Image (tube, rainbow, N blue to C red; front, side, top):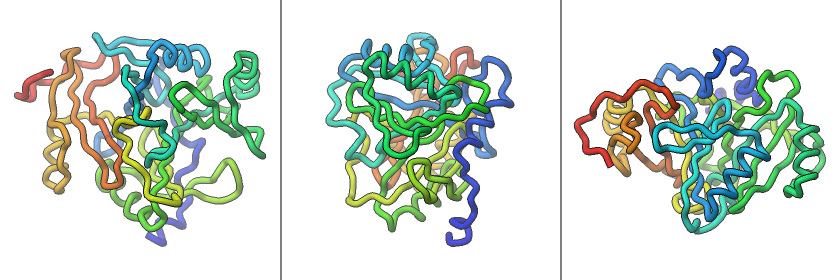
Length: 288
């Protein structure tokens, strides 16, 4: 792991740059060799309309439908919303926040200030956090070189320091993440990470053991896979138990399954999450 840690391979803006090669209209990044790409962030929220306003009017997403599934679309990911009473904000759980990159950050900052949106910044004028409903903190950076107005960038975990090498290795083995380090944007230094197509999984040392994500306003993260039935069988062969077996979602085209990583991050696996994807082949499991 020391040799891996010395490789500065997880460069934040390389993720944004990857979208320059995507065909027009594409939203999720091409899958890696294991058939995995970033899929979605699923938020459990008190007021769906307030969150929809935040993610569309303030952040710049587009509402799309995959049958009855409402998605808020960004290059690299979808935001999904479920009405619930979250047990707490992401802060205090293993996944603290996630981050996007803006092409014209000064324009975004001016809009947020005019609209009274809470902004958190320290020393770097090109980095900070914008606060949404239900305690959501979205980290932001500016990159004028990217083509899209805003793209998915990273998911930030805060495990105990001794857990970071194991966490990097687990996401590399399980989902094909590329371990390395990336530049910290808020202050000098490097952050251990794994690259997954469409996002960067960043691991910073936590000060105490944190709560699982299930039930928090950021309830789970999601990866989209090419063949969910085969992928689930491979996970089970590796001794990874699914929390919920593969099933067909109500839209009749998307397959879903759930697992939890060893540190408490709830993960949804999907196949054909994007609108317009070809229907999933029957898995022989009851849909509900």
